[in-house]
Amino acid sequence: MDLRVRALETLLTRKGYVDPGALDRIIETYETKIGPHNGAAVVARSWVDAVFRDWLMQDATAAIASMGYGGRQGEHMVAVANTHDEHNMIVCTLCSCYPWPVLGLPPVWYKSAPYRSKAVLDPRGVLADFGVQLPASTAIRVWDSTAELRYLVIPMMPAAASGLTEQQLAALVTRDAMIGTGLALEPAAVAATS
Amino acid sequence: MNGVHDMGGMQGYGPVMPEANEPLFHGEWEKRALALTLAMGAAGQWNIDLSRAVRESLPPAVYLGSSYYAIWLRALEQLMRERALVTADELASGVMATPPAPVARVLQAADVDAALARGSSTTRPPPAKAGFALGMRVRARNMHPAGHTRLPQYVRGHVGTIARVHGAHVFADAHASRPLPPFLEQPEWLYTVVFAAQELWGPEADPTLQVSVDAWEPYLERTA
Image (cartoon, rainbow over all chains, first blue to last red; front, side):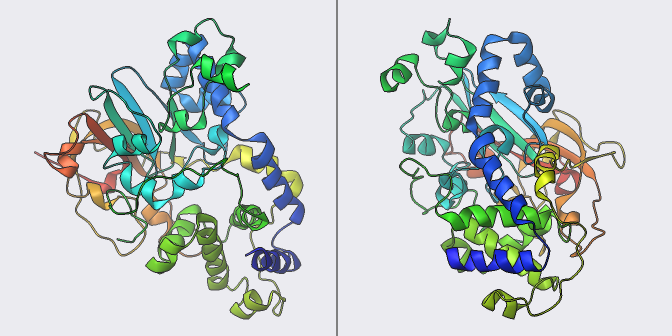
């Protein structure tokens, strides 16, 4: 594949359709600037700032833009918040729609047949694949991203995390928690690995 | 199109298996395939819905047997070939043999940050008053268009509730209906429609589960 794609890039460059510098810049952006740390910062702020949280739930695109995140594949954002009574999960059954500005590029499993097929039929089974079990009384709400709206799950803040700084809280927010296939980490779990 | 890409509710694909340490890219080619796809998209000779339409029209065995960046790459090659931006011989040899065709624009390195930050909004002025309102019961139409559509099979014919109203957006089915610019946008009202799992999957389904899709107005009909 490496050879084939290199040949394609050479051809398109010679034709004048692409600027190789633009390709480098795109890759650099998604390797270094745009990733789940953006979404984690949004979630952490929503945990400490009730006014921001309200704004995020009402107009996620604007609230997220206020932190400097937006644009391609996040033009129309919707935030959905987990509670003890309801757990949210995001999927794109038809392709790979994913909120790039806050989560970066989707992982392979998100674009895979197992996830896309199972999330809407058996989301508790998906959670089990990720080692997560929720009480049977917790309702599950799955959002299939079939148009240009992009969803961000706001996980619940662990009770043991109260009193942490916004930055410390962001370290608890995993990408999977913002897709809904995981939960926010307990502070003790983060402390143990750092 | 009722293709293999429309995976919601299919069974037998096995468990979801996250990779160990999850590399962002698996080899240099994935990076370049991503960047080429974005850069050529910016050339304006097709749109995102046409890209999706080509990806999901790949032969089923090819689609299911390819990684996602490989699907993107195949679709990119096909989109360029169909528009005579490149020839099949050029793709095979990697050597330019025909003069370049005109494109609307070439994305320059200096413009990448602004282009990614701007994105491409799909909201448009509404064509008319919204046909449905919050809380209204609607049925997803039982339709099987041969062309591109974003109404998954698993909701067709089922009754749900309008949970959110999102204004008017470029209608994907129309947007993919013309191969070349000017593309047809045909803005339509867009709704989040939520379905009970027991409506979709039967009485044995998880009683706590609800599943929503985002559906343009032409996908929906009134129900008693």
